[in-house]
Length: 111
Image 1 (tube, rainbow, N blue to C red):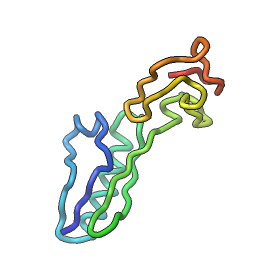
Image 2 (cartoon, rainbow, N blue to C red):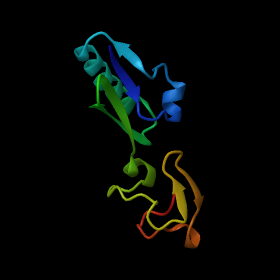
Image 3 (cartoon, helix red, strand yellow):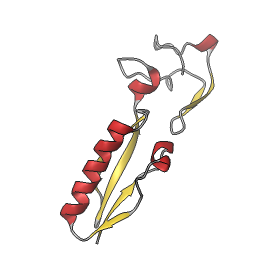
């Protein structure tokens, strides 16, 4: 058996019809499913995260989740406000405090 597992479940994933830890009889089926689901999530979800399917150890494929810095910061350079702002929780994307009136020095302002 081959398993496709989400690295972490974001809010969009939790609200979707997709399931975590889906099993398949063949490696080819798991590979196809992981890649298709990652692509669909990139297209359908809010855009705060990006998803990428990767082969993991054993009989597993993992759909990795990464912060989409361009979408969060609004900068075309991809510089997020994690740099220079008081603190930002990367996973939930909730800024806890802005520094000096809201600018983090990136030229984009804090989220």
